[in-house]
Amino acid sequence: MTTILVTGGTGHLGRDLVDRLVRDGHRVRVFARSPRRDSRVEWAIGDLATGEGLQPALKDVDTVINAATFSPIARRGGIRPVDFFKSPSAVDVEGTERLLALCHEANIRHFLHVSIVGLDEASLPYGRVKLAGEQLVRESSLPWSVVRAMPFYYLLENMLAGLAWLPVWPVPKTLFNPVDTSDAADYLVQCAFDGARGMRPEIGGPEDFSLAEFSRQYQRARGINRPILPLPLSAHAARGMGFVVSNGVRGKLAWSCWLNQRLAAIKQAA
Ligand SMILES: NC(=O)c1ccc[n+]([C@@H]2O[C@H](COP(=O)([O-])OP(=O)(O)OC[C@H]3O[C@@H](n4cnc5c(N)ncnc54)[C@H](OP(=O)(O)O)[C@@H]3O)[C@@H](O)[C@H]2O)c1
Image: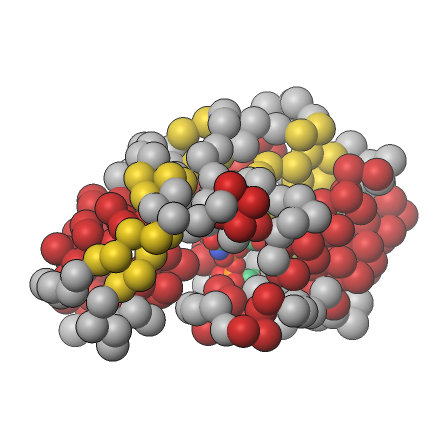
């Protein structure tokens, strides 16, 4: 049996990926800065930002799913002024470059890289960092695939939770279709093993709504009642901030269902 290495396997998407790979009977190794209590997988400890632990992590590996990232916005769950000026590249660019070079040496048969829908030079700095990482993969002579995904529901929830203190919520009215990590993980696992390579159809959620509508549904589900002020955004600004509608594959889980599932999980954990 071959081994699949998942970078970022402790993250939101990575945990769903690992669950599916284990469920399907694959041997999974997770590359992480610190191990978690999960004996279903092998743990390879290291750091993409320094390269520590990467070479041994690739021993006997056939497929790499690169789902690691360092996004200050996702980590804190909100955008700050600094995010319009800079974003660290040590994991997503230098780390990806290091990983690709070692994958060459290790004769990896498939390098599957997770990226973001709509990236271009007009993206915010984090998006440009992700684009630079994606370009390294696309220029690589390894057998590679890139899957671009829309923003994940967990991030949308964190961003909306950060608006709770505002008496009025000013939000863009551009349409977009965020997706759950469960749907993205289902699709990525399919892409890992279906034999196709290159730029794969992107994955988005089932509903094209404005952030105003996503906010309304969020408020209803959380018992919040604030006026919502839909703001027009230029097409350029909207694209730069990731407010686009994806082409390609659609996930199944609707935002309102995800919100109910989350609430049930929070209540159960309490
Ligand atoms: N979030 C979104 O809305 C969204 C949308 C589209 C695509 N994506 C892409 O989907 C992928 C997963 O995103 P996510 O939101 O699930 O990410 P996440 O929850 O922020 O998880 C990031 C993962 O990367 C790992 N990581 C960070 N720095 C590292 C380092 N120096 N060395 C090794 N591992 C490191 C983290 O490990 P630790 O546990 O050690 O921190 C964690 O496992 C990324 O490629 C992202 O760009 C995300």
